[in-house]
Image (spheres, rainbow, N blue to C red):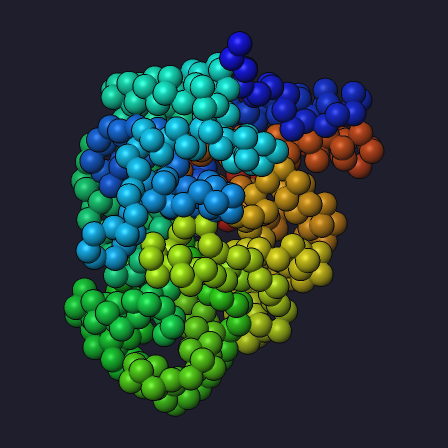
Length: 480
Ligand SMILES: [Zn+2]
């Protein structure tokens, strides 16, 4: 007999029978609020072209590095998952077709027991694709055929999915040298869905980025500025930020190895910049340049009002061998310990007291939630605390975030939830998990008589809807 999918309606709510009804009441009030997704990595071409997706494997598995990393850790090879090596010439090992790769995924689906990915996928299978049997080796083909067939229907085209998911706002992330072709198509289309871009200038700010040299050339061509002079380079950023703003961007995003910032004199900046563009720079020069550029980005944000996001501390492409064969985003990024208080001080000394500036801090290092991040965000007017990110976007991770930050930063220096995903279909499941955990935490405070249920309900609504709109400067007058 086939196994049933585990997708209990009261999943993730507290076990305590006195607290669970409170959590459930709160959750029921926020469950159906619109989704605000102010930071993520979905592909704007999906919404611009609105073509049907093909099959569950290419949609759900291939782009999801959370899934790839787990499977790889258990000896599944990327070619077996249908992923092509990026090198030119014939592949060194046979690459599975989508159906064979899906069968292998299904056979190994048990690996995701107890993980957030398992919870998200089960919710996608039941709520989006109406499956009731668990995914196993036995049901693999049934799933593949049923989902492939559904994906051909009108209601499974990207814009229809977006509308059905009740997404009110969704930001993608594009490089500073992206032509923004799909966002222009979206702007000129008659569809009302609000999909905007985010300015991610890492490839023109990080001298150690694999594409730095090429990107700097394109940056000059695209902006008409001399990007080999310090002033021209800064002006190119201003121009490009204006292009992004014209296509709806409300924020920038900076994925630096550390949170270091700097405040050098103009002469020092010019000297450092000329070393960087000459290619004759040290690792210290590269770090100092990234640091100075965070401060420059903050200065520009004071002029153009883009909210800054700093996502530091990921050791990208840790597996060199895999990176050389397959490129980035294949599940080989590893969190690192990171320091904020000294690192951010040069920037904060310049702009930290301004409420006009808005900087959202993220970390993969939970040890500094209570030690540094909550005290920083709980003091400086320009700082906000981003939600539990990536490896910490899990039931326990979200709970630990609230437990360690609320006493110092409260709820109102945090920004609600980010799904930060490439996986379009997982967006409702991810937001739902965060809503359930926030409501569970709030219910506990109600049970301990630290909050009234009325206050808890307003906080739940703020965390779900009002705070992300405020923090990301998503302007309209709606609030709940
Ligand atoms: Zn991201």
